[in-house]
Length: 305
Image (cartoon, rainbow, N blue to C red; front, side):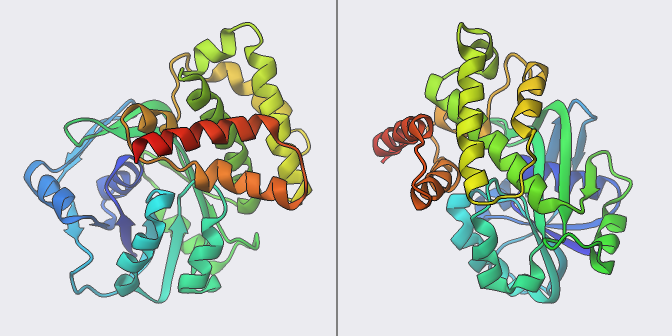
């Protein structure tokens, strides 16, 4: 199968690189500036699970190339509309798109742009970023990419995709409950990005401070309750499970939103926290903790502009 990875940043570069490492037919759709850098230096992955460097196959949005079988969409939410336009020439009748964005709201946008039949559910669990040299830095054992049909079936096409993804150093997992998996990830990233950006600290100092764990749990309960009001398919015990696993996070763990804020970059607050707050308003559900977080993010955006 011919695989197109939109972006060669921390996520696209890592998972696309692991597929290329295994000999898969992978092409990266990148901006001209990133293309020039990769042509000069190659794509370098520095990972706790094994380093890898190679010269990737690259295209830009202006090139004339046949449609691909699989698209891994790893852009940030604030680049989604541009990413859709960049992808259009490379999406054919049988192309399947696996979005790896945080959150949920992008699914409807992609379905409207490309048709419901072309969009799978997808998410990734990984701690990775680009370092100042433009190399992919993967700093923890987590490197899961989870995908599946949104209706929960194990179709012939997703089984073929699972076969195409098999044998790599990264974990590509076919799920029969991808909607639930996406909402669970959404809950986790909403809470962890909220507390780390609000308190300007990694998870360790927050977790270990007086009142830290009760605050995190209260945030989990608030966000989970909004999701339940929306009838999202989350498990009844998910907050308990996330609180139990909180101690397993590295003391120095930072969310991608926190790292972006520290670097003065755009953030996905509207897509992540903003969408949950829109649901809270829709169901007239009070959300004082998340409202404070969102106001903090709005102040950051105001200062950024």
